[in-house]
Amino acid sequence: MTESTTRTLLEGKLAALELRLASIKRDVSRSHSSDSAEQAQERENDEVEDAIGVETEQSLHLVRAALARLDEGRYGSCEGCGENIAPARLAVLPEAALCVNCAG
Ligand SMILES: [Zn+2]
Image (tube, rainbow, N blue to C red; front, side):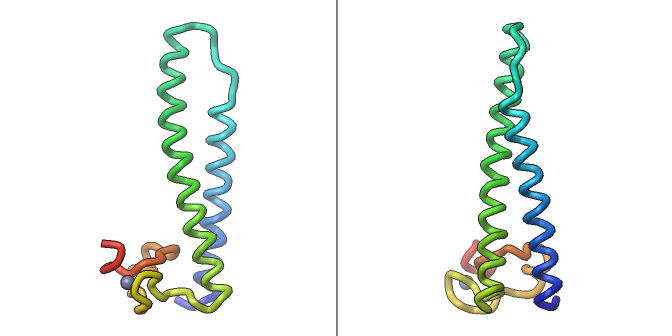
């Protein structure tokens, strides 16, 4: 994978994650109904959405860090041991900051 392909991929991922996060935040802050049974259900939904939101924010952080490494010419090196991250791993997880050994 060339560097510009990787960048395009990461930027696409970044945009998708930002959209998802924006829509989760909109959902969580929407006005709740006054019916108590529905409120309980909505609270549950909010908890699920919060968990997804946290996960999305973590992914965003990883993708931004990967783009920064790309800018600095450090992309593809493991943050743990400094070895090259296997291309097959980067193909699946382009924002990976650790090699399989360090991530395991
Ligand atoms: Zn490593």
